[in-house]
Length: 112
Length: 115
Image (cartoon, rainbow over all chains, first blue to last red; front, side, top):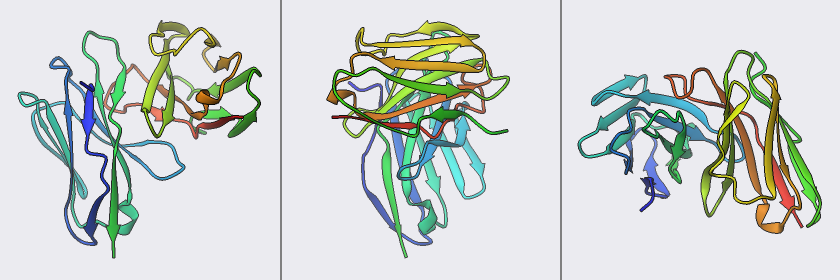
């Protein structure tokens, strides 16, 4: 079983729609969760951090965390073609090792 | 701040040759990570340092790979001898205090091709 699982996509949504990206993780002790965006040929960049159950909003982005279900998601409202990228879910390992394990990423395509 | 700086951006080498990748972390960051990204395996953690000391090298694929951090502003990842299956993008990342709310900042990566 992979430690962090994501649907590879591509997830195709029309411009202006809500894109919903999902991630599950296996380490029940994990406390910190991150979403990174990676454009083709570029490096990952941090867009969201969440550690409490519930929702966290930042502009058009909302991260949702459910530790009981070991599930974290990212919603992108009013999707734009510039949001087309691969979105990586990253989970901090438990045990104080301070390292992030990344999912394989979901490729998002927003079409006009 | 110039961010995390990696060199070279691209490296093409022949099988069996030694390859050295370089990284300069963000000043003041006390954690440095080396990741490798391929289409098949995604982003894999190879090794990380805290205050220049290697903490976890369990992701280093085999003895052909080695990493050093002689001081707070410089790290190297060396592959000797290189093999075609080592072809990947190698990212260096740094962070302040591990996995805090600011996560990791990644460098631009080194695209390695071994022929």
